[in-house]
Length: 291
Image (tube, rainbow, N blue to C red; front, side):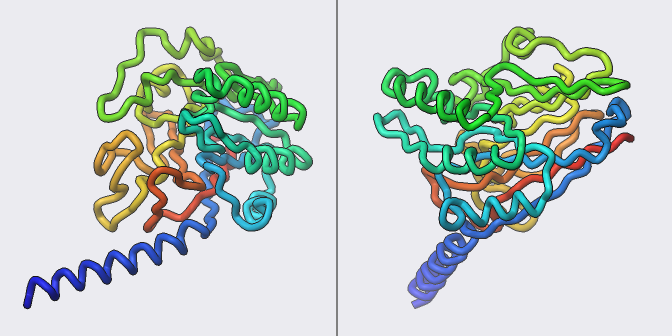
């Protein structure tokens, strides 16, 4: 008898969890972080940056109107997209409509800079996506998006510059279970060195390499990929990462390495594991301040 009671309780808890997850997947939150740096030139004081990642074809209302309203409410000076706006599973079809509708709406109001995640990397490298990738780049450029694929853009101020770079990691760095070490000088070879009096914002999709990003010189690293740990439990944190690490050390939020900061977004959508629990979709707002 006791066994049946336990089973019934577990089934009820599972059903309630799925109902809650269905509700949370459609909820939007905005998390604001103040980013301070004594190197920041006065021209960039108070600049507001929205960071989006891991949309995975999710639409919050028709044509993503609720997401667009949340971004407008943040009053950003620019929008950074950290990758994985679509789902590319290695099959022939990879719909781009949600991504292209969103970026087209955003570029009407804001400068938009787009970095690559592992799904864009599949578009770029898998032969089955050859024509889809060409369309993707063409449509982004036609919309006015600046693509940061192992490149960056620098804004010059009176007392220093602000550079936003996008690092496109290789497929090996996304392998499951075992972390692949980056070769010496890996980031420098791809996007160059950090210059003196340059505040460097780095979009790098995979948060596993937090220490390497900081050692390279990223004052602020913006990551995604972990989907907030999928399920966040009180006292235990995020339960699982996409590379099958249980209770990963980082999953969502702000993390410091010395004086360097990493912001790990909980992301906006889901794909293979269509669950969010204690982990609502997130728009990240960054406010730059001089220390």
